[in-house]
Image (tube, rainbow, N blue to C red):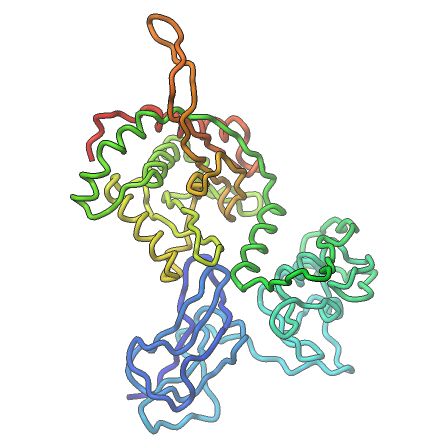
Length: 445
């Protein structure tokens, strides 16, 4: 077998890089086709890179903790007894990975706007951090002064985004002891930007008291925290609420759930019904199914509904039901149950948690009446469905108004006020409620 390069595979449309978590195989180990070689992590999910065929792991081209671009070579696979060449040429079909720069010596000069991959102290800067630094006019000296919270002191996206509003101000210790007072000008090709306001540090330091337990966030919790803060920073959130009478829907489900489980081998919950209603409303109001790119609005062709799912660790993950508008209720039920089960088992693939265009979170499963959910970027809206409760309600009848016990629930709709105004955001959630309220007791499944 000829020697082949193992490339970091594509892991979804919005995933450009991954962190090497742990090598499962050592150099010289025999591997079988589809056997895991290395564990990787993106900002969305952990995964493994398998061997494409039987062979021997000749050489590992990256180390634990390295941030690797999609399509970059990470290892060499060959036949047993194969030798490793002194230099490895990149595959002709791929763009060569960025070269590893030698650490910059104290006498070296880095041009303004040029951010080296490795700093004077050997600190590594990911492509994302370097791009943010360059676009914001952050100099190499400023980057070097930021105290990173990542592995080995690496500066993360959150670190540099937290630093930007405080440029020129004294830090509270989470960044450099003395911030750079005069930011370096951005490259001439970049558009002029207004000076960032100087304000207090975003995160206060908390000193634990005697007897307090300090729990280190796991990697997924850190990423969720970064994603939520980024979403609130990006989108001005507005939330609209409606109350829906879903009595007919509850009675219908109670009538069919036994026969449905016996026939399909699946339990039918309310979640696939909610997703069906959301998908129908999106088809009627497609400007909810958009994303923002600068000053452009991208109207998405597909309706891919993310569903927030709780994991045993307490973290949340959002698997995606693709083309939800093309599935009937049986298909939606099977898709929802499958994704939810594998989410709890940690068996989702990267493709199954990317590409969502709208998100639903069923907070009613935790007994919550309503919630104000945070938008899952780069989407522009998210809906929370609350617990269904029996309540007295006024009904209009030919004989006059009467008070009756009804099954009621709240729907909460958070949306990005940059592109979704109150009229559209409010009409959308009202339309979803109308669809649920109009559910027929004779609906066939």
